[in-house]
Image (cartoon, rainbow over all chains, first blue to last red; front, side):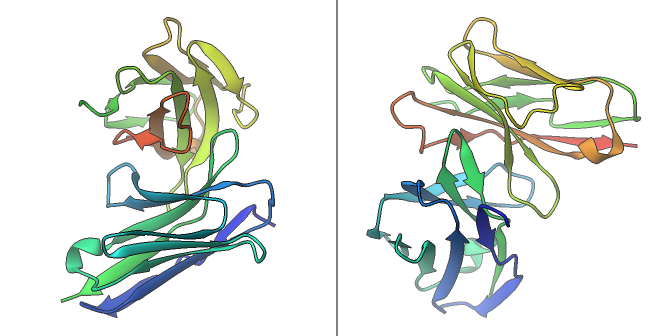
Length: 108
Length: 114
């Protein structure tokens, strides 16, 4: 079993839709939970991070962490074509432990 | 503020050859990481440096991979000899010592082993 599981998709939604991306994990010691966005042929870019359980909002993006269920989510409101990318969840161990990434396409 | 720099951006070699990648982290970042990202997967940590000391190299295939950060700034990652399964993007990241959760990535080096 992988430490971090993420559905690779692909996920395709119309512009303006609410997008929900999710990861599960097995290591209860994880305390920091990150979401990265990666465009094709680019390095990952940190979107936001959450410490421990709870919600965090940044513009159109909301991250949620439920440590009791070992489940994290990223919501994107009013999705735009420019949001089309691969979204990676990551958790902090010595370095980062990443999920497989979900490829997201927003259709105009 | 300049980001993480990596070179070369692309490299094609034949199996059993050697290759080296270079990384220059964000100025002032004490912690440097090398990740391997195979197509369709998330990045996997290979090695972490704190200044010029190794913090974690448990996932580095030490029979063929080596890395150094001699002066606590730039770093090189070497593969010798390369195998077909080493084809991947090699990403360098850096962070400040106090914020390891905020890692900034370079554009990566795309390695193809034929």
